[in-house]
Length: 155
Image 1 (tube, rainbow, N blue to C red):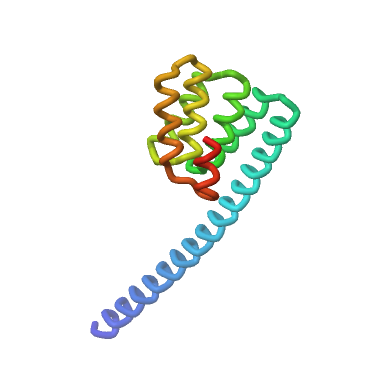
Image 2: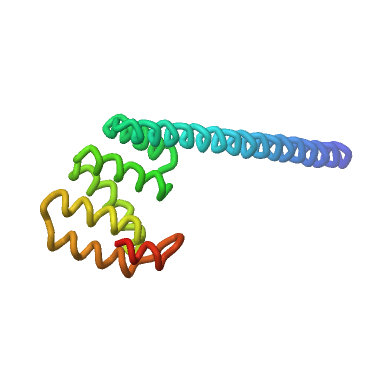
């Protein structure tokens, strides 16, 4: 009787170890596959943005906005993609959509100099001059990622 209990205890531990190893292997494989998928997604988003920029240079702003929207659906939190979309929409004179795109970005960081400058341009495009002036002021005193002094002077 004691031998049978010992065997069943050993059998239980062996089964537990095998299940644990299988779970560890599955976890490692899943983590690896997620990293690969994220890298592929980033590559696809980068490609879409590059196509969008080419379309912008060709004056095809609405089509560029579609590319930027697709890139944003892949990388929702990318600030640069939001700005690129807003610029394309602004160039296409779709002020309502540009305002919406920038609103999302400004909700996350209301001090973003680039986003405030773009919103100022949208407000002026919509003939909302008072709001536009307010956003120009926010752009001047906002946070810039590079060349803050030079960008403030340009604004």
